[in-house]
Length: 105
Image (cartoon, rainbow, N blue to C red; front, side, top):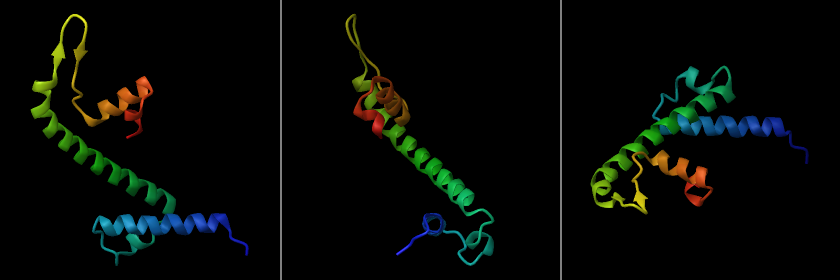
């Protein structure tokens, strides 16, 4: 059985796009939502928009947790300094810079 990978990719992208639109409570009867002029671009824009929303929620929750934790956990002396991250992405950046698993978030 022959399957056109381009058509398969297009269908998967379109279905994923529709799921994202539904989760964001878009008007699923609106033709501009249902039939975007460029499906891949619409998919990517929506995925980026959702990622920004998720990142903002994660950073807000992290900030709330940080406020109570930072005062207790900050430590500094001549040999050691512990600095609490202020944003969730600070952990990811540190993990990438130091090549450990925290950077895989």
